[in-house]
Each structure stands twice: as structure tokens, then as C-alpha cells.
Image 1 (cartoon, one colour):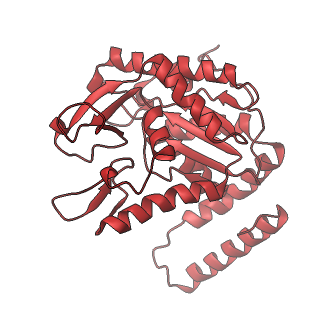
Image 2 (cartoon, rainbow, N blue to C red; image 1 turned 180 degrees about the vertical axis):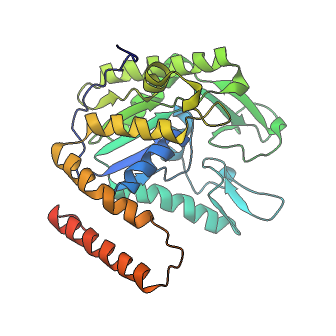
Length: 312
């Protein structure tokens, strides 16, 4: 009896290996899947600018002048933030905040990913209007930082604008394999019909860009896996909007099954008991048995790294 309609997952242009330099950029879904990769002992740079939801906000933080004062503001508690990043980037001084954001972009450039996984959430974006109207002084933000709604105008990228932004991302990383995904998160605040329209614009844009760059860009169907394979509210978090941890685990398993090479499959199988041991939290962490357990776990980890020629 067939109880599912499995989603066909196309192979990546280049399977991921233990020596791949992988970077994730985009929505909270990118954060979750990237964290799974790091938990599995694979090197990955995950959301260096924090969570970003739409194609143009990703383009902005990668291309604009990050030391321009207009992209920073001081909140009521004396903390400085960057309009182009999420709230994780904050500091007690303007210079420190700028340095953190500039360092994040430098880290991505230095990482020099050979595979860039970009997860898109919506085509909606917010434009900040410092002078109260949409003009040259306005700019697209990555996050509104809970500032007054009157300072922003909500807009949406057209299909052509989405394509242009994604095409530019391919040009910015010409040597990297670009893997696009669309987040299964449901934007209830837009209404579910408009949320689906936003996803449709992204899906059409991704399809077009993959056609334009067949040797560089491809698509991983995370959105379809949740909607067509899982198809049940038990695979959503209590808010009924975010995918549940079980859904993320399932997508990660499907990703690994199709997108990594045979050596990495063997490594992940060997690493799994070590991963569980590393996560173990004994009742008395200073007891002789706990210390011995940690020593043995570290020894096994070192042996595994040596077996696969991976640096700790």
C-alpha cells in the first residue's frame, strides 16, 4: 500500500563531500538545516548575516557600502544595530557594530564557498523611508528591528525583480555551485493565499535562474517535501507555521540521501554514535565515570577525523 507521494530530488551538480566548503544564507530554515550539517561534523558557514528572507535583502548586504552610516541606528537602550542584518548584530558603539557586519562579509569571502545554499522565504520586503517618503534616501532593509511601522513601506518583488536578484547572486559567486531552496514556513500575516503567491514568485524565479545557469545553479525541493510528502500538521511546530524539528530532521535525511558523496555517507554513519555521545549530559559532569566517558569520546572523535583525513 502506498501511503506517500515521494518528491523526486534531482542530484546536485556536484555532490557534497567532507572537503566541500559550504555556506548557507537566507531564512530561519537555512539556519536550521545548516545547524544540522554542523551537528553532523561537516564544515559549514551558516547565515553569517543572520536570518534574511527575500532575494533583494541578500543582495543588498552582499553589495552595498557597509560603512555608510545610513545603514545603522541606535535604539532606546543605547545599542547600535544594522538595518541590513538581523538583531544578532548589535554593539555599544557605531564603530563596533560596523566592524561586526564588515567582519561577517569578510568571513564569507574568506570562506570562499564552493557550494552556496540559499534559502528564500518570501518576495515581500520592507523599505525604510528616513524622510517619510519613498525616495533616494530610502533603502531596503533586512530586518525592521521592531522599530515604528511608520518608518517602513512594505512592498513585494515582481517576478522579474526576483530573477534579477537571484541572477546577480550567481554572478557574485561565479565559481560556486548555487543550491536554491524555498522555505516551507507559512506567512500567516500575509494571509495564506498571498503567502502561496509569494512562494510561487520565488519558485518561478528559481526555475528561470536554474535554466539560465544550468552548470551552476540547481534546486532542492524542501518546500515540496513538506507540502507533498509530509502533508500533516504534526510536522509543524505548535504555531502551525514553522516546520517541526521532526520535519527538519526528515528533510536533512532526504538531503543527505541524495546530495552527498559515498565517502560522506560512510562518515556520517560512523559519526552518528560520536555525535550522540558528545550531546550526552551526565548528572555529575565531574565524576570519574563522566570524565572517562568524555576522554573516550574525544579519543573516538580523533580516530574518526584521522580515518577520514579531517582536521579537528
